[in-house]
Length: 110
Image 1: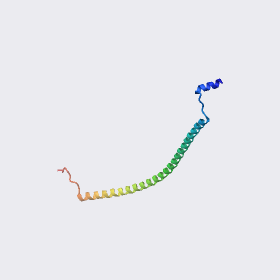
Image 2: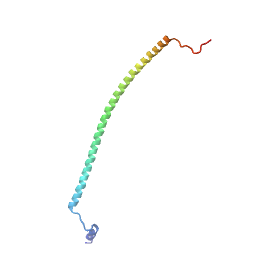
Image 3: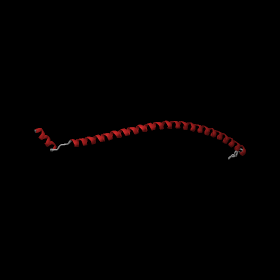
Image 4: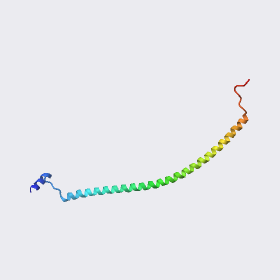
């Protein structure tokens, strides 16, 4: 009896019904279920994004290799063309120098 009186003094004589406890329990269960579902959903999204990223990385790597090969071929062609133009330009300079003759000297010797 003394324990019952002490319990009433502790909670102000109020008690919780089983309906209230069931409501609180089901609310917590619902929140827990939503939390687990959100965690699982985010994990699925992250897994899917990682898979797509791996696929894109592979595609980008193959495209990069193809592009490097094409750029190297263009550089070789451009280098060959530039060498040819330099040789032709040198030939033109020599031909113009022959047409013009030697340069006149600024100081004439006595």
